[in-house]
Image (cartoon, rainbow, N blue to C red; front, top):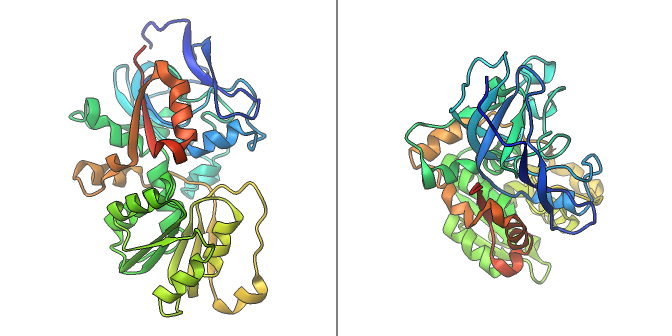
Length: 361
């Protein structure tokens, strides 16, 4: 079943030239390829730091010309014959991870490693930064939006496609966070701020220490719930953290910037018996100083988000316990895709956190 859609659509595509500006052009509108697919008309999408990694050439598995984006909400305009949960007109949240719900990884809720899914949108198949998108395994992968959530009230739910589940699952849950612990967030960019929001809403940390070199981002971190701010402009963040904690260190340290200095701060500020959780996407090797670390009995985790917390996070947005709207700093129309990328990629100049891109076409 389907409704009429145009043969072509506007999309942001991977230029393959090493710049952070996509080629915005008309491309073929997606069609149903498998009976478990739906086609959605995208209402709203956003840009992720991973999109910038692709644009810079750091994700070799993404081909030139790929429609970018793995986050967004929309309504169903076509559904495959095997789709039972959704019908034309239904509004859905599309997560960054799609899942078959049948393979061994899915049975273990390890959805990021689904053998016929995982992170494929805007990566190995066409993505969400377009007027329309194809979503595989729709019954298992999509989430129905509440009927009374309309217009601007939809905006915070876009943050559930990736950044908030990533902050919660990969940063806090994998880091074995418990209520009342001391937590460090290294990097106050969008993903670090998402981790702060989840920590405050769900774990009530006794101390929440945030590290960055940008005073404005540290100020925002304070607004989001940080108790202590550490400016690493003099490259001494771990010394400041140890002083704050009477040389004990932090229970859990979450790395959110994906560069070697972030790892260094983590390994030098975690307490004995504590955990380090890697959220940042690292493009270069880092040095694990086991000669100094082995006696601390620390744990380390890193990896892909699985998006199994989305339903719980939806409830917390609905009951105003999770203030996801704070992550949104700018709004654009889909006809302004290039401007949106420029703003997001130059956050140090624009103050950008997450952007909302609304389909006006």
